[in-house]
Image (cartoon, rainbow, N blue to C red; front, side):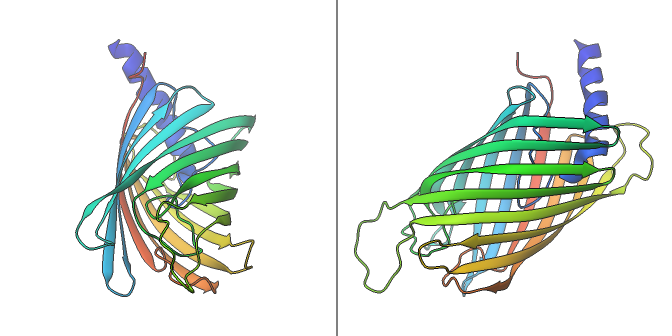
Length: 269
């Protein structure tokens, strides 16, 4: 068993050092986490709207096999006064295409999300990670080119209105089209030697949404940095800000993100 665990670490060490630039901060790649592994995340987001508010997202990730993985999230925030539990979300991703070459590969995956939230949120910017109840589906395409990874996401979400109170002149969230283009670059190590080497990655992501009923939209820019230690511990720090757009009352506008993630390999039988 000890030999198997060590071999898993070595294999993931190679995976982490070669492909770590795909571990985007604000989006998911088409690649999956290692088979039979479990990851634990804790994320904190903060924003001014106009007063400072924050959200904490505990998360468990499970890699069932090389093609299928799941995320289970909880949401807590002080956006409606005191800090409280807002809701939760289940996210499934299925990788249906893999094209591999030396130092490069192409991945394609489909994803779905089911979320619940107790927040009385009324904005056209549907956010299923804390602000809205609803369902979402979409596609992800990721291309690795040596130390550079590029990824594009296209999704469509439908909000489920829990609060039925009528509010004159306040838009009810219904449907939203989301899209993103992400890039990640592996800065360190220059040469891979073993899985204990720290990884340092730089990211730049463009995150956009469009309300198909009104035509309102926005585009955010999101730079980020990431450190991976011993191929098991990941630390993210990023900030997203609006470059252009006309969707009012956004909650994720001008938002920082900080995250710690811990991975446990070959733990599922």
